[in-house]
Image 1 (tube, protein in one colour):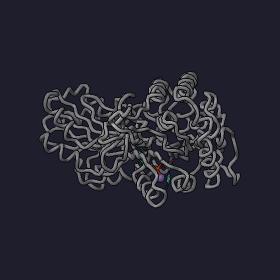
Image 2 (cartoon, protein in one colour):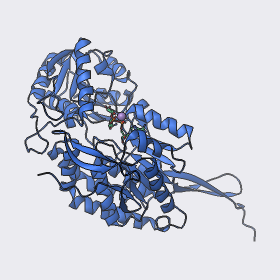
Image 3 (cartoon, protein in one colour):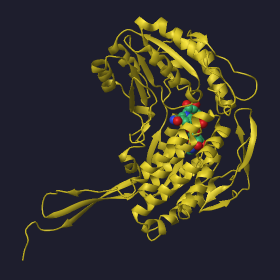
Image 4 (spheres, protein in one colour):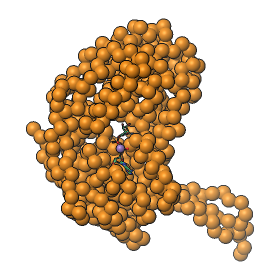
Length: 489
Ligand code: NAD
Ligand code: MN
């Protein structure tokens, strides 16, 4: 029961077009590696056309620029309704293309329309300030859309990333060129069709499928693109910042993953902590930027905890993402499967204790068994690098102060968590001192629509979500007028 594929071309200026070169590329189902569809392959020429459309749509007297802010919001509310109506289809399309377990995707899609509505509600609340300036002046600020935005998406949660970036850019009044990950082009195209239905004028949203090294590079180097928002690897994040610096000093928002520590104190409620620790690292086969990939367990409960963790991992039901009882699906592609298996080998070589899993599961598709390593040391590769796979690394610690230092001894700083019943002290001290953009106490991966999301250190730049999310797509303009304080009659 494969979902029907409606769109495989590029979406430029509200039209479906072939790529200029006429080239296409295959997109796959990670469950068995079969080809789902041939998709138009965009390149520099197509990016140029899309950026030109977005630039025209952003021109001073365009329909989009003259539109009332509340009307922009209404378009997004209509879009939310359409996404709500099509939520099941979208979940299926995504699971078919990226291997996320369908019931989890369905759950994510249940929350998605309200996330859009939250952002829609900001469209007419973009306010400047009146400034109490010194001297004979009247001073105020305007917040204005930054311009054409290049939005580069990852393959792990493509729908949510599309929604977050596109709806925020539109609420701010920007126009956009979206470059989906080459592994997962299909949902972005479908969402673009829904935005058109919702009333987005031509050129405001464009989608160009293609590879990072071609279409992605063209977008990040384009002189008419004012801003890039990117979610993906640290390596590419750094290239994007370089491109911005070498070129027209584009504004950038980067979300670059992590090596997030989850700390379990001796006094933790283990009945909650053990399943959460598994959930934190095995969800979506570990392909989540906030994965709890360093699990620090205090010495008093270490052995008991490790036993519990092994039980959890053993009992994951591996299978087709479309089966109702499946808990664990495939990795996105062969390359990622091999990369993760390579990390597992490294873990073994460097002396971590492999307790469960560690192998490819089955012979078709890209499945890896949920894997648990105990007695991991901070300097081992599996404790340092983002694995992006179903690998739990358990490390032992003695004191809170020690674990805070060890948790912070990483170039990343996206998320962190602590399980403790000492909420008065340990939880507060940990939350205050851990270097991470998101901290969970006695829970993990709980996402909150109204809250900002983003990382410290090399996990990124800027924040998505929350009331201030639109600021990432706005410039502040200070207007100062000569107005004498004293009224002269
Ligand atoms: P990637 O960073 O290469 O790809 C992400 C997006 O960037 C894709 O759309 C890709 O086409 C584009 N891209 C690639 N090279 C580019 C370039 N030079 N210029 C502009 N755009 C470019 O990620 P990947 O290779 O698919 O995965 C590698 C690793 O990245 C994973 O192992 C994981 O650690 C990390 N990752 C993180 C996230 C996250 O949520 N932060 C998501 C996906 C991958
Ligand atoms: Mn890459």
